[in-house]
Length: 332
Image 1 (spheres, rainbow, N blue to C red):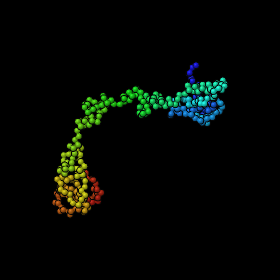
Image 2: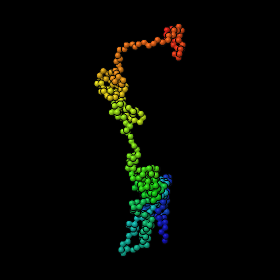
Image 3: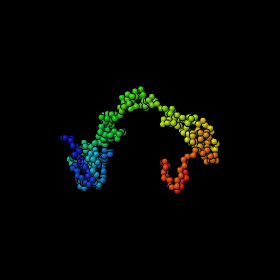
Image 4: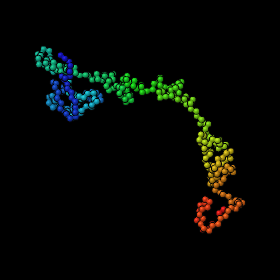
């Protein structure tokens, strides 16, 4: 007797489509309670028993709601299973010592055991699925292959193939041969085939990049001494203190202290009298711009120039723009 296709004698599977509710089965059974219906659950990869059905007739089950079509990526496309699980405790017939044994009773018991044996040959126990889940990787769904995206499966739920590992390593820098260390020659490895360590970068900066920051600065003492003489160009820069000394307005009551050098045009605002003063470097003094003194004496007259007399409106002479006047006595 062949043991191939042992499940054919006690179960049948179908593919749901979301509309069909009636499904027939070909196997025999002793009691209606021995008929079991289950649906495939893809997330848990288990058959889950359901009671949402009734008998349409002796060999047909009718679902309360039509089972849905399986996910195209599911492990199995046959997601409906109608099977048999024969109860063997107790046996159909019980024999007492000294009683007559009828052939029919023996046959009933043997048939009951036969059906149970058929089911045992077909059934894979749940504990085996649990064992496989706990101790073995799923080759199809829990393996990272070359064509998979590494970062999408970088977790504790996948294992990579050797090819996938090698491909990932190729995408990374080799610490042994593609890294520039402190002791290495920077110029020899200044290319797109190496990456430097932090120490190597720091060493290169210290040795190759000369920072003349302090040399190019104009400080406050230099501004007070000579206004940064010889350093007013596009190479030097003023420090914050020097810039404030050069440009900021004095806001105070007392006259600013005398300095070796005060910036020409520097301003002082007297917060008491509200007068504005400007530093006149020629006079060496603060000049009040709001209070002008009395006019000085007139200077001597210059030599007489040529005199022109007009009786008609002036047009243009020697580049002078014409003026529409009725009478002009003279132009010096």
